Image 1 (tube, one colour):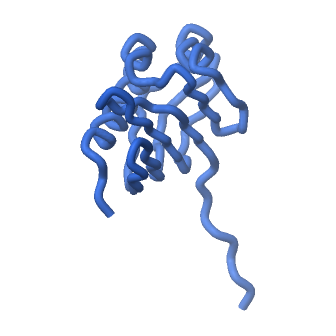
Image 2: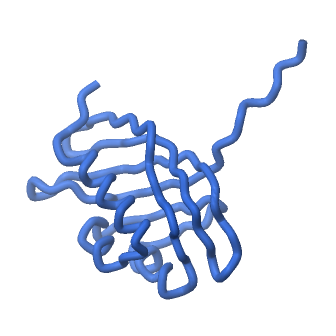
Length: 128
């Protein structure tokens, strides 16, 4: 499995912008048709995703690890683990989550088209 040039860099820049609560930096990374799914299942448009910081989201730490990327030519899909220390309007929303990212390549530049953040939990115990 080879990772397309630029996708890992895109994910690192996205995580850094999220950690810095920097909507301006995110603006340059997100595709115009971006959609994001948060850990509670809500769907945000690009504009809504960029407005999260002004509406009460505060990231103190935001890292993506164990990223595995599949290349589909002009698109790539990455699946990894998101660890965040985050609050929303003063309420803690920290944790470890499964994250799926879809990147698209246009004009020789990768942009983030979709993010899905969901629960990451241990598998249920098997009966003995």
